[in-house]
Image (cartoon, rainbow, N blue to C red; front, side, top):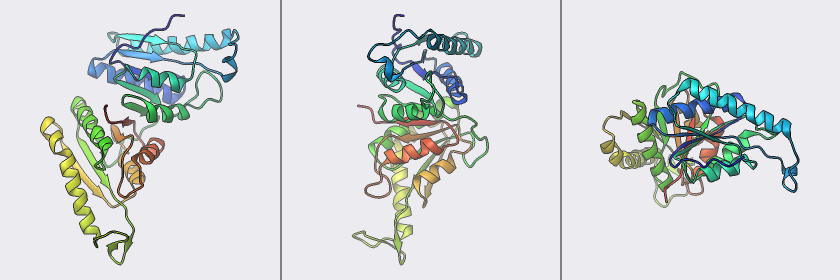
Length: 293
């Protein structure tokens, strides 16, 4: 079967028949419809034993065809006007999605599920794609909660890094296109000894660190507020561990946005580890954004 190229600027969704895979497909349709972008379905099937001499596996191909046909029918039922293409490559799902991300606007994957080969967890695929894709990646969780501190809003984690700045821009664009508010969260957690930060050159108390966080947050948001005056913005500076705090704020949210890399509240804390923790624990879809080249 000839390969179907990814349309430039398309929403690409990784297909599988799991509940989160179905949720990812429906999320991708909503994203493509709202932003008037083409939608590209990708369902890769792979087994390491096939690399040397792929055997004839009609039953595997039949299952693959069924997954794609079901997905196409679902897309058409949700939005018959979408520009729709699909591809069924023989290869690694993560590798094919990362390759597709070079031409895509966004890649969408389910947080958990099983691919065409039994035992291959899509959780591994979603994490790999989120860490290596060339465009923003949406990881969709099934059974999202409706109630929470930021219900119906877009939430973005802010730490002052280049990756965080890219995440802020993406979060504002998402909030504006959805007609919803944005909550920016800056978390810090440092060892306090007798009311002062341990190991710092100048003695600082929690109030000083919190004020520094408020200044960092205000500066990070300033230009974006002007660009998106329609977006209602909330600012939160929290003395909490970043992963636990962002996961708690994700409850009921429309979307959580995090950067792929960056420094957190103290030297050595990589936002990469924070983003991975948020991906695993969030109660809503998570967008992972890396700085543009």
